[in-house]
Length: 157
Length: 162
Image (cartoon, rainbow over all chains, first blue to last red; front, side):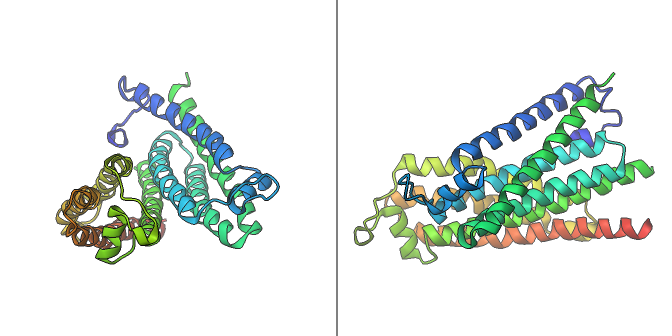
């Protein structure tokens, strides 16, 4: 987190490519997380419902609760680490206090509530399932915009 | 100076959220432990050594490695990142932080490596595993609370000044 102490990040010959690389990895992480969730759980209500509750027509077994909890446990770790780092970079590169807090709050709250929503969907059905899908896209989109804007601000002429 | 204060305040928000995620991480870990292993030494030993009455097979060295590897990376990072925020907290909050972080590292190591001792014939390590897990949960929540309260106080102070 040393970059938080450097006065001019954009002018620093070492920190600029380092943060550029980090942001590129965060962007890729977000894209691949969407693809991976689409493949494993499903990001459309019908596909996600088949994963969570099973589907007799396609002989799909429902996921076990401990299996789902393992996914949530791992996702919590990756979300907290990636969003903390991204928020720290974004806070340094964006000038507007309002936008800074808006995006950090949206991405963090979206991710924080998306994880228990998935658990809620397992037990309580459709409302939580739709909630999980909406929150999942909300935090991924917010984080993607934060990373993209940070990257642009880091390298703009 | 004002701009710097605004950046610092944004960090406080991010840190406060980080601790909430940390709480979720500990709760989901606790829940998984309850579902898969159990909280008595005999349940812990049975989980790793297998139980013919439950038709469960003993855990292999490779199987334990699959769990140990991500936890070695994740737990070390989690404790370090969380505890290092106390460096920027008021003195009162810092008291005992070093001991707490060291105890967390030790508890995490014991939690990860006890299963290897259990499958190699040291069933008594089931007790150590339980104690380490309990310490990890309690100290983890205590550390998260310290960091969260420091960040929340900072946010409240900033709001008052504005």
